[in-house]
Each structure stands twice: as C-alpha cells, then as structure tokens.
Length: 204
Image (cartoon, rainbow, N blue to C red; front, side):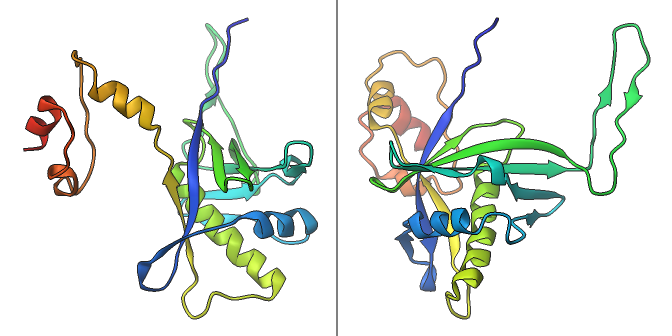
C-alpha cells in the first residue's frame, strides 16, 4: 500500500479589531463553547458558492495532550464529477437538494503556545476560507455566550508561523534552481538585508 503524506501548516490565530489592529486570539473559550454546545446551533457558514460546516463528531478535547481539535468541511454542489468504469460510459452523480460533495480539513489548537495547526487539503478549504469560516463560527458562539464585539464584528486572521531554519537554508544555499516570490507589495522587503545577491537583484 502506498504511503500517504499529510501536511500541516502552522498559524498564530489573530483578530482584526478596531482600526485594523491585530491582536492574538486565544481560541480556548471559543472551542470550549463549541464542545459544550454540540449540535445545538447551526454551524454552517456560507462562503459564496461553497459552504463550510462543522463536523460535530470530529470535535473534541484531548486532555492527555492538552489540545483541541475540530474538523471543518467544504461543501459544494457545483462542478460535480461523474462516476466512470473502464470501457463503460460515464454516469452522472445526482445529488438531492440538501446534499453536497464534502472535503475536510482538520484543525488542531494547542492552548499552551496558542498555535493553530491546519491539515492541508488541496480540495478542502483554503486558508482564507478557514479564516472566514472561523469568523462566522465565532460570531455564532458570541451569540451563545451573550457577548458582542461592538458595532463591527472582529475578523479572524491566520498569521503563518514561518520556519526560520528553512529560510536560512535557502538563503545560505549557493545553488538556486528556482526562486519564486509572490506578493503584492515587494517594496516592503526591498530594503531588507537578505544576504543574497540573487534575491536582492530579483527584487531590485
């Protein structure tokens, strides 16, 4: 049987509050509220043509390791693939009005270091969609707890935890096969001392 590799990405959960300021978001109370109110509220969040939903049976707290975990699903009802056998005609997959195709992301939260660990799934929710789903869920949990952010609800932001060792390994490597830099504002790092002629030349 072929081995299946599962990739996880690490984030610091944050909230965008007044004046677009960023503050750390301790998710412990939020997750406790979800676990204490299982299946008592609608946990779906609409994301345009797709929907995020909470998998209630895959949410829990691991007391032995002091970690929380929940699973979010991405539901879609458009661009449905067909069922196919070799040398046979394809067959449409017909879904009922309340049925969707689901892809799943596991989220693990470590309250000790306040880090959110997200299972990568090419077909599942993107990082932006996960942040939007958590934003919607947080607003629903606030209603359960009788709390409010004020006139403008806070928005969840997931800040990637960068592996500095991996960056240093690339910067100190004398042979580059390919360098890809993505970003809307390259001027933000143009003045940085990157200790690399190639990277500095690329940015300039």
